[in-house]
Image (tube, rainbow, N blue to C red):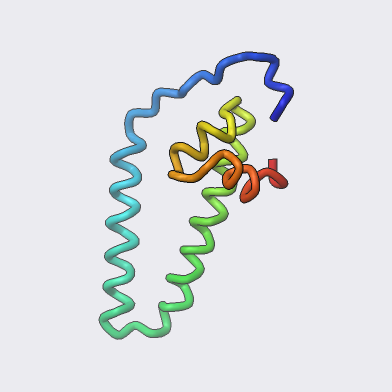
Length: 93
């Protein structure tokens, strides 16, 4: 996103994100335990949830780029280089 016109991104202060993410993790772990307890029919649905998480991540990165965040900022939050972030999501933005 080179058309950023030098503006700094404004960080939205969303206080519930940490709690929301922790809640989602608890749900995913609980679902995995339910499948592990013998519900083989639900295994496909569990895998589909993983794919949904990938799609949500794609949407989040695209949104952050539109909001003005750089590849370096996104990469640093993910523990990857800016080049790796751009390579993974650059063609989608």
